[in-house]
Amino acid sequence: MHLPICGAGYLGVSSNLDASRSVNLYPEISPRDAKDVIALLGTPGTAPWAGFGSGVVRGTHVFGGLLYVVIGGKLYSLTAAGVMSAPLGTLQTSSGRVLMADNGLAASGVGGNQLMIIDGVAGYIYNISTAAFAAISGGGWPGNPIALAYIDGYFVVAPSGSMSAYASNLYDGTTWNALATSPISAAPDLIKCIFNMEQQLWIIKEYTSEVWYDAGVPTSQGFPFQRSGAAVLDYGTPAPWSAARGGNSLFFLANERHNDGGELVGVVQIVGQGGNPQVVSPPPINYRIGQLSTVVDAFGYCYSDGGHTFYVLTFPQGNATFVYDASTGLWHERSTWTGGAYAIGRHVGNCYAYFAGMHLIGDWQSGNIYKMQAGIYTDNGQPIVSVRTCQHVADKKDLQNIFIKRLHVDMETGVGGSAALSWSDDGGHTWSNDYTASIGAVGQYKARAVWRRLGVSRDRIFRVAVSDPVKRVILGAYGE
Image (cartoon, rainbow, N blue to C red; front, top):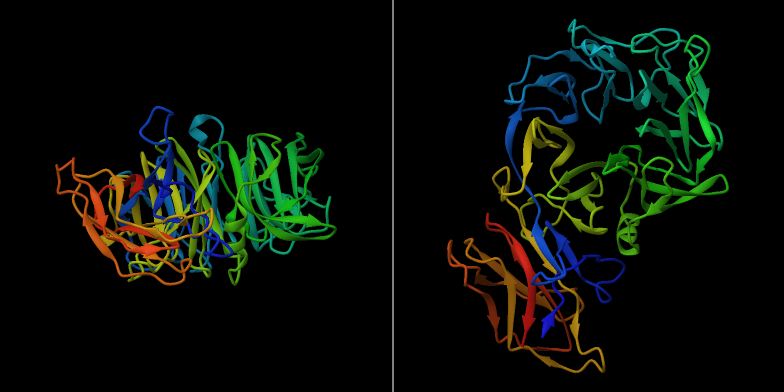
């Protein structure tokens, strides 16, 4: 009989109801004439690319053919070969996340050669032409910026605890006119983050979001943007760093407005210009997020690889990483080695950039920058433990005993290594020992991962794990 090993993994309110879970494995939907409709593929590993050694990688940004990074309290640039510069400037802070944006290259005829960085305390401008680095000051500068975007020649920021947005002078982030500000006050909640999506200014607040457009107002006369008609959405965010763009969409962990307050409802996706928000996280994922001690520190980033667009959402204090695949509409989890085979925590990535044809992530515990790539089967040399916990196997008619003579997990074999099988007969609360089976030495493509004489159960949950540094493709499972 065919057993339900592949598919979505949504452990939620009770493992007795559904214990299925995919850690470091993501579903791949296959064409109708494939061997099976859905398979599970191993998530990419990481390898060292560049690093400072100490500090934490707080943010990344690609500008003018270089990768700019903030590590600890310093700004650096890196070439495509991973050669790091001397410090380009010093921030007033040495920890916490940073945002960066640029206003283009003057050599192109439209640009200011400026990179802007905000850290919640101050804003800074680094001029790539003059190599000048300085904190922003002046009468029109609001201070304490927590939100940043670039659109149509302007930097736009919002300070902490504010309902107002501020715009720089055209192509000049060092100058801020005191008139170039506007309240964002369709609802009385605070601004959390700002995004440029398809040349519209999306201002995401705590319980609502507003869409603004460039009205052509000079900054000497006022704020350059105006709200687009009745474009006020009843979704905001408790976690400003969770917002990320990817695949023509904007994703964020969302509150839904109720009167002047709201409640956490999960992850929202907004597709394209003027798109309607859709909650894309299923109830089990929302339940698990709701059980975390805090969600305000959550951060997200998007990347596309192999025909998939992933939204990676990490909760630092909650020690968890959930990943939404916008291409399939399915979720999985990612975890970096924490010292135990089934000890699941957050992923190592603290920020992301696509640079020189590489997916690069910064380490949340060090100044290291890693290349993240399919075909790398460790995390900086540490094991990647891919775990698939299956759905319940039971006689759904009258819950009678099932005698399990043999289990065959259909995998891509001949890659080396082994797989470990364990099971639970009490709804996923306790587990058996691990029993390993070879998945074939390199080149033994006809090998099969088979376990025999597995006993009897009224309700069994199987768990399959691979920790060897080998390719992982699970195609299905068959029992006798």
